[in-house]
Image (cartoon, rainbow, N blue to C red; front, side, top):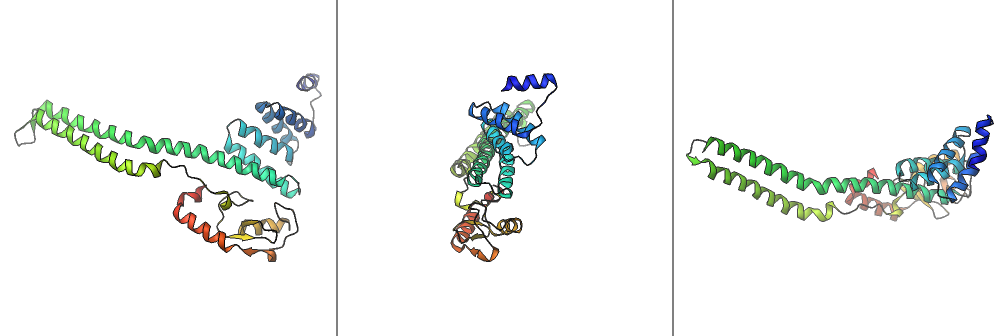
Length: 261
């Protein structure tokens, strides 16, 4: 297939049908040629900005290439297109969006843990370096202040004070370490299936699906169907999900970081 495309390009007959590139992208997905999938999907999108298949394959390829932020953007676009086109693949694409967002969060969490776990070491190094610098200065002068204490003795006291402060820091950090290094996870029951953000005011439909009120009402202005089941749905069919709201409020109260998920 790639050879045919190259031949067409050399002859000046470049394919202008987005389906050509999405079909080839699907073949390359099966062959796990992820970079080539990205190239084909981007060309298909250039030709047809509303290509659901192109955004779907692009999201998958980017996730396999460990580019979760871009994958989430592409998958979210595929999800929006799937809703507007009433595609039967909405649930599968929603799952891809959630997978990409989890992967994006995991990258952020790994970086956070690395930063926070190195803070103790960096702080201790700073304290010891400053204590040594002060000790060296005392040794060079031979005196400490005007009290007649020998410079060497004063320097040792200064350096010991630095080590004492390091031990105190280690004790404090040790108590907080378990919480600091704990991976922060948002439970799936708290995630809205439209925006894939945390639900603040969940409502439940007559079909038993829960969404955040504001995002579902915004969706119903464009399409009076359940985003996942595609069954008819009106705003008056919604009911507050009080149990889920209480659980959501409790979770957010104890995990303030989740608002940035």
